Image 1 (cartoon, rainbow, N blue to C red):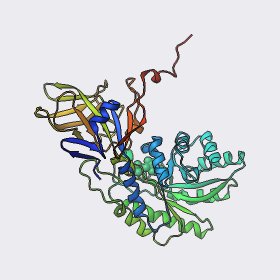
Image 2: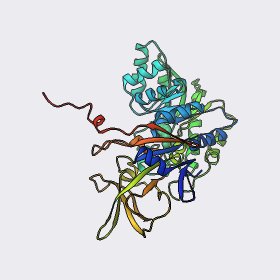
Image 3: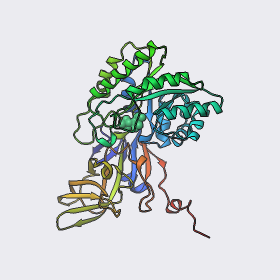
Image 4: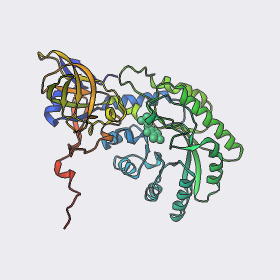
Length: 415
Ligand SMILES: *Cc1c(COP(=O)(O)O)cnc(C)c1O
């Protein structure tokens, strides 16, 4: 689904013109489409028809409570990585009983919070965490539901920063030691072994590594069952990629098919933790050209969004499509560096883009719904952008633009 539609020279998200959003809420702002979010979720649902499966949206991709609420209403569970995310899920009307808690080091306070809330499962990533969780559960007189996140050591063929399932990664427990840890977990009085989890990386395009990982996980599940350790669910993580530029992206059902084939006829409930593939292409960052600067070697279009708003280009050298909003104007196309006003050479949003620009033009930075706002910061004391959800002909402000005074409200000077 294409987020932007252009009719009569006006760029719209669903039925709302982007210039109207900019006029109303100012720039920079994130714009999401309810229909696109719903459609992405529906693709997973359709792919999983006939399977006993649960979709747990990975909150870290975009944690705005309006988005969490939308997925909760569609029946989703949630994959969280902090106590803060659990609080968001609950505030958004999500069901804690459908929450899985991932992450390499959960604090004791987070364990307590999640046990009190009654989450579905802790995805435990080390021997030490297993012991700590048992201790915390004991002090609360509870049994903590656990899965071990195993590291199947398959190469997901993605960017090294978002590859998580190799032996060298900090994530998960090695296959070789997983069985030993399951025996330990099974023996601990305040743990309830319920499942197994794996997540091999992000922005995955080839379905084979995930299918291979599922195959390895199944072998482990079966050999545990032979010892009397029976698991109720298998969590296959997230990671399906999206199209940013020219990536060949399979439809959701085709991406999941090789994995589901290996899982055919299994009794265990299947869990999936998609993040990027649910929200990435359902959002854009709307920004205005402030200054055009023609240097000796390069032309710069300095816009009012920056690396603090969208870190992915600076962080991963990620490519986002950048389009001019609306037609018209008399400017000639030139090769532009699209940069923000932050005092860093790494503050760019796109290199070498052929665009016909005038100061004051609006640009849409596409595929920015995932790891966009969620990774934003206040670097250079820049208030974070507003977020707007479009629903048909309606635009809803789902996060106000921050105010400068809020940015130092928690600070104080010495007496
Ligand atoms: C980040 C993450 C996800 C979501 O990954 P996407 O690539 O956004 O789908 C799922 N599970 C775990 C454990 C994660 O860390």
